[in-house]
Length: 266
Image (cartoon, rainbow, N blue to C red; front, side):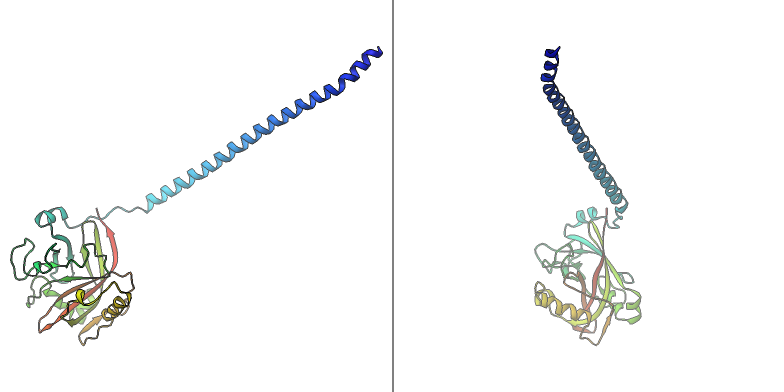
């Protein structure tokens, strides 16, 4: 009997150790399973958050996207007629509703050629190679003849802006390109000398551009019409419509507009 008790006492430490090991293993397994569960839970939460953000952003983008406007000019047909025709201009209140050309070889070609490249004294509205066709330059000049009649073609009817009432009522013009409708606010109309503006000023120099912008905003001319609520900066895109003056062959009438809206089209 004594021997049996001694054997039990001898076995007790081993039994305790075995139980302890088993408990430690169970705790380790439970800890591992708990860690795995928490990691999976956290991953699911992050995934759910990302999905919610993605769906919200996607929905917001869908709401923000507006249908593209129709372009009133058929540029495919226009370019088939003449590949030099790259834009169209419309000035409400005048007869200016014409294509704009740019010759790849001769800046003065369209001075006396029509949109089909046939000789015609009244020519076609045009820009020169120094200006990009995107109208992204700080200063772009569009040239057109004044035929010195009351209701003539090309830029003849820009003379109407030399009337305060007409100037006050007509504040915008529009340029159409293949993928854009560009809206310009007319901010000044005045008579300038006949120098070649694009050859006379280096608009890549900030101080030169700023000085010329100030000239457009506040012309040193007796005959001028301005909208004083206009400001220009280094990022402004200005288009100047230039034509001759009927009673002063040494002067040019400049109608200046600054880009206020750029709308993509189909």
